[in-house]
Length: 73
Image 1 (spheres, rainbow, N blue to C red):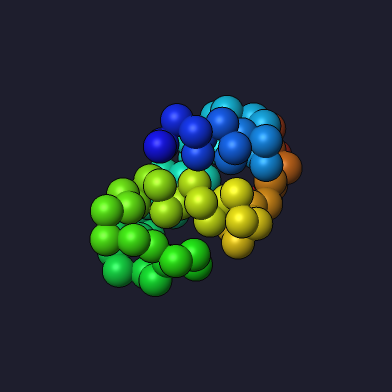
Image 2: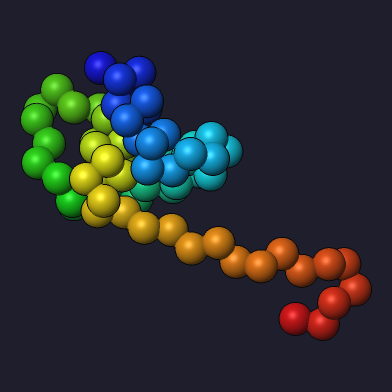
């Protein structure tokens, strides 16, 4: 199930590294007790829930501009 969800989530967030970062951050939040944004079955893993949230458009992300070393931020 996870591989199918991963393929579907990759259509929403095509950058694989970014997708992994979004999923891992959300899994951490769910593990700390945050409520799922989609309906979760008792057999759903935290990863499956995070991927289903991405597919459903419930999670957003924001890219911040990278700063160069020496830039005053």
